[in-house]
Every structure is written in structure tokens, then in C-alpha cells.
Image (cartoon, rainbow, N blue to C red; front, side, top):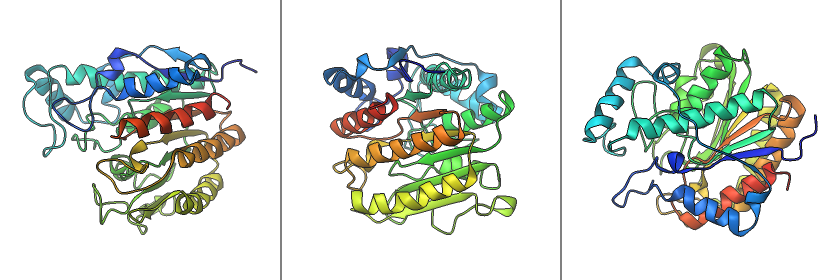
Length: 317
């Protein structure tokens, strides 16, 4: 089925609102910075814009524990304290904001499965640090993990590939599915000896029946595009070997040179290349189905240019 516009992007204040104020690196202005640039280069005319969608507690509990969700709801009402050890502050309405992140991701999953679009991009998503029972690293609910559980329980897909090029290791996804042989995991991130969360060592490749289904590639600080392209070949071969039915791609822009809290030095060409190659694999094995989540990125200009490079490829450019 040929479609004139192959990609959709989720844009709206309900999604932008997921962010932390008072100088926190993950501010609510991140979506606007990206979309302003997309409009400036005419990219908004080449994709379908979808409004953010919310979801309910029972959907979030496909991945998270009831006790943890109850705690988020309680602290969302008071707006006090932290949801983890000090990175992720509560604010009034944080539960509702996080529900829009998850809901938009799951709406995108449904549209992709139904063949409405080949590719979908949710810029404020890819909250890959949240564990099943806690927040972590600016991440309240792990939309990636919820998407994986949903693809299985609601759509009967088994072999799902999760690919992550954020500077930080996607530990919330990795450890939640470490012993799951059906979750194909490939993550290129700054070496954990130098950056939060300190995980994702090369020898972490899955446990038990899942041994060999996980690939962690720690990148040295100051690694640029050349090192990325070399590492990417290994990641791509690994993903291809497992022939996934659906690809989830977390394209955090904090791996671009000049991010205030990381030490990698890619240019947006890295993000463009990864997206192009994953689109090829999605076309080959997944009927084109690929869901892209924005992830991190705390230099607003970097975030805008990297995500637009990704979206341009998704739109067929």
C-alpha cells in the first residue's frame, strides 16, 4: 500500500509539558525547540502531525508495579519530593504529563500496526531509565518498556528490536528484559565508567536463554562520527541477524557534540545514518514499522538539528 505521507510526528502542549523547571536540563521547552526548527526548514509540511494522546493506569501497569504507579499519583497531587534519588523531581501534574508520553507512544504503535503510517516519531519519549518499580534519570514511566509489553500482549508480536543511540545506557529497558530472549537489544552509549548510569558494559549480553540477544557497545568519551559509524556496522549486523518484527529506536540527541552533561562528539550525520539503516531493516523485516522516540538531549540546538535529521529520513528524505 503506497502512502503519500509515510511518517507522523506527535506535537502538542500536552507532550511538551513533560519536563522539569528551575534550570533542570530536561525542561518543557525541548519540544518547541525541535518543532521551531522543523517548521523553519519546511519539514512540518512533509509529515502528518498527530495530537498527543493520554492513557490509563492499567496500561502503565503492563510494565510498572502497582505500588510505584500509586506513588507517582500521590506525589503528582502534592508536587513534592523526588521520584528517585534526586534526578527526577515531582511536580503538580507529573502523572498526567507522563501519561501523555506513554499514551502518544502507544497511539503511534497502533497506527503503525494498522498500516496508517510506516514510521512514527514521538519527540518527548524514550524515557529509558525508569525501572519497573521506580523512576530514574528524568524518566517517570518507561514508555519503551510499556510499548514492548503492549506489542506482545495486544498485538502478539514477539521478536522486537530495541535500538538506542542516546549517550546514556538504556538501563531501564536492558535490565527489565535482560533474561528475555525475544527482546533484541542494541545500545551504543558513552562508556559507563564515565557517565550515568554506569551500566552497559560490553560483557552484558543477556542472561540465561537470552544470552547473545543483547548488544552493549560502550563508546569512549569524545568519540565522533567515525567511531560511531564503525560501531554501527556491528550493531546493524546484530539486529539483522535476529530479523525483528518491529523496531523501536531511541535517538537521544545528548550524544551530539556540545551537550552540557555528556562527552560524545557525534554530528547529526550519525543520527541520520542510523535512521536510514534502520529504515532499511524495517522495510526488510517489519513491513516498514518503526517507532522512533526522541530520548535525551540538553543542548537545544543539537536536539533540534539531530531530531530533524531523523524526521527527514522518516519522511522519505
